[in-house]
Image (cartoon, rainbow, N blue to C red; front, side, top):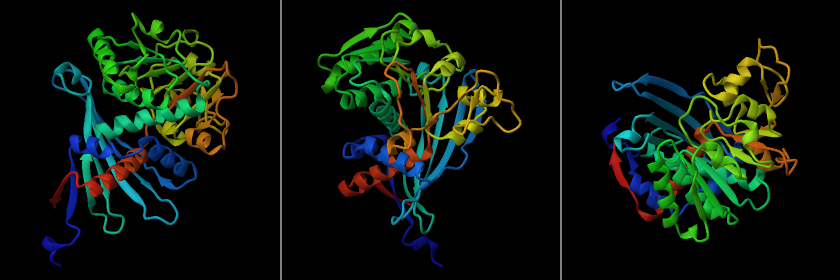
Length: 357
């Protein structure tokens, strides 16, 4: 066989600028909602992610994640790909984003690359889209106040999308350990088209930020919880994006706890909900503890998945005064779904470079 001239030897390469340009023609929230719905219906493949962590020569914690996934919708070719996303917590101090990587899409017939594209923009926007869907389905009606804890790239992605999708927002409280980052996000908010009439507040501490917020979105790098249940106003929705900001007490006190995929929580040894499950304080959606673990007194169960809420299999919020936690671990199938839509748009408008293997 003449491999050098194999007809599928070309793939499309998209830089970050290419991805942003193509994504302007993509409804990312809809793409994510469709992927969550397919996952809830069992029309997805979500293998375990590979995790590699290390300490950098400068003493920072760094990690690599490799996350394959596929969507297998009936009557359509499967969408198959993988995200690799790498991060060092010292990067912001170097003036570069904490995370970066690639998303790879494969041809379902030949298993050869269809596309390789910058991953961080898609990862940030699909994360913000999950939050937007949680707000749409789990928040109190017409939320007016948002608290963002952590003011990096994810915070910017969230404010950009939430100002588009939550028209009732009137107040955004910002907090970051580095005040200059909070000021930078405040300036970014002022530059957005939908920011007219928005009050931006720079909070002195995280408790002040969340105190009056109906929507609480932590996007930090912490590994120890600090948000206590009495910090939160009645009816608050906590979109627990960075996964370790809540205390165990806050999870146990919540009225409803929603995840994106229970198996990710069950198998994770590092993040709060995974640790709680291993300790016997968090039970699966069926009310059972981890195999070999005894449920502790006061343990609570996970109520369901966001896909179940979207499809009506779970009612979502059941009380206007309850605290609701949406705790998305982050699923590769969402990145793959968004990347597939971005690729289709890029091909339609001629964005990106055609490369050969």
